[in-house]
Length: 150
Image (cartoon, rainbow, N blue to C red; front, side, top):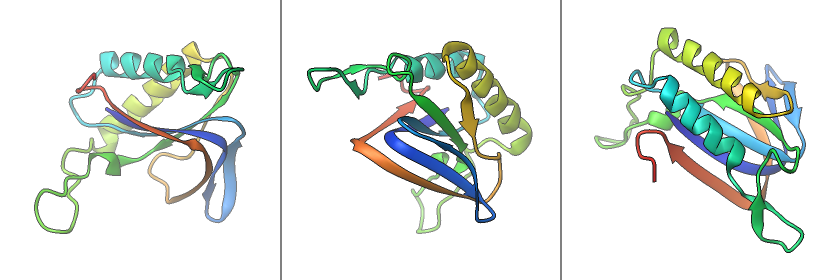
């Protein structure tokens, strides 16, 4: 399981040229799954996202979590996070979980985040053609892989 987390002052997702969901200050989370992902991966990454101290405190230091600032979450499914560019110039997505596996994992991920976070989790639509807009605050962008827990 991989996530790309961006600290944002605002973000939105549009589907068929209409805004589907939007947030103000918080985290935009792109998430991708591979077939070997499990409940353990979901729980570990969910807790990491909620507890990650990447918002500024009163001294301007990154010392507060999204929970502490009562920030919002916008979660977007993105199978391309497992793109392999090892051969040639056309990415391979062979490691990305197929929808029949990825959709239940995605839904479990949303449930886990909701259990840990005090505000509504906003999303796009799994598998839809989406246009994501954001204002990256900082910029702060962090990549986390549940199989490489550095």
